Image (tube, chains in turn red, green):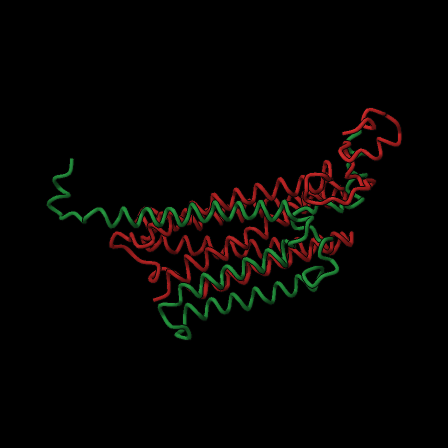
Length: 226
Length: 138
């Protein structure tokens, strides 16, 4: 807090650790994580904001998980998880979604190499695997509703359809986003704003896989185990 | 329009003080980075998934311990995803991301454990009604 702060010169502009936009790579300070770095780059702030959204989304899912955990035994004399769940289908769904998370990572790596063909190819594979996952889930829901085990049958089934259906809705919206990103990347190329959106999509897709880990463990495996 | 020129300037030069969540650059010279990182994470996640299915569907594990085993395996797999796919590290450039995650985990634990705890108590404290009592309800 000395007098040099009041002296405006070209020199002090460079030394000021709090000046706007100093994260542009010209800063000299090395402080990290202590609030002294000045405004972060747009890439960091955009991704961090999206990280906060993902965490709040996971908190919303935790409410659905809590409802399911409370109502899992409230079958009202209807079918239980052990009667309804098919472990083979869940295993395939898990493998498909995990692989799509992996190929999404490969698309990110390809975008870092600025390879349009490889990025589009891996994004397409990611989308196809996501669509396969969604197909298996819709098929499972249709089978259950056909067996008079729809969401209105019991509190257990209401909670099940709400939780798993919410995840499925996220996957469907993710596929829509993926298609949009493929088109934007194709038309606009590797622009900084497109790369930021692609990065956020990658975060979203990996987060959906983390939520699926909780679903297949707590809902399907625990529900179908003796 | 000036913004476009500005942002292309900032994102070309990486920020060394803060890392975005999931940024590839921060782990590119480590085991969790690049193609090898994704392959390693993918392999570990497959192994943990197979272990979960085996634990639930066979008698390899003492039955009353299956729930604990499944929870441990699921938490381990989420950790693998966070480290190898989302590139979360304990480095100083990642403090903000890790703290936000820690706060999220706290809220998730409060919501889930709190709901289960309270609802179990309510369930226990409300005696089951007979059919006659239920018919007499207003």
